[in-house]
Image (cartoon, rainbow, N blue to C red; front, side, top):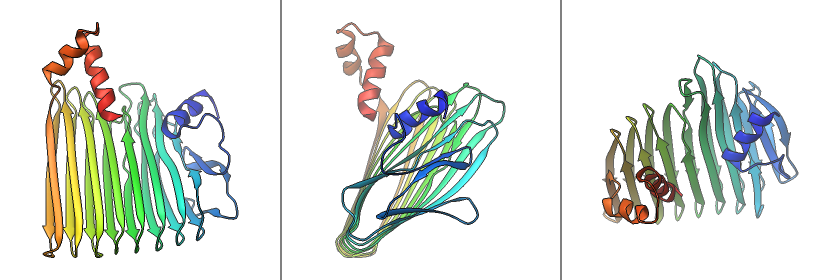
Length: 305
């Protein structure tokens, strides 16, 4: 790996060297490094378009890294990753994709991830996306995530679009079983003419299932963001969607909720707040010696932290 590779891996996966334990590093459409053990197996798909990850029953306090980097202009990379998590296992998965593009052609990564959690399994999934290189070079990221939670499962997702992504279309579909819980924190930054679409389609199927989604977005320049949420409650359940956005310049943010209760015991809530940075916040920071631009950047940094 060269300097550009190392910088991308540090930003999207906090990797400053090849990690210990289980990992799979994908570069320009191919796996360049992989390690697994008796508890966590990584098996390449026969068509070379992804991997199957098998986490054994009862595994505790384990982590694995699955970053993707693209440095080739004009490359379109499609990958399918399937996670099979055994009963009562507990694991942290660090993924994400970084694109470095300085060429004339668009570079694109479409990651299709499927989570199959057995009863009592707990997963924390951390995913960061980043685009760097020349401003005119297009960097496109389209993650698709499907989730199936059995009884007593917990899935925590932290997804962050750090910036520099020309276009992204993020789709998450989930079906929650009895007493299962899903918690999502999403953070997205767009600038210039960039655009980002996010869609959550969640079915609360099991009794006492629960979902909490918090989306924090900052749109600058003439960028556009669209947030769509569709939650259906089919039993005694709780669903809470919160969309908070900061607008700067001539940007636009759109939030479209849809909540459907098919049970008298379903409780579903959607909250949205979109607006510019409050003047008093800017004034307070400017009294400390910051310029207006520096004050805006500090507020945005804290909002997306």
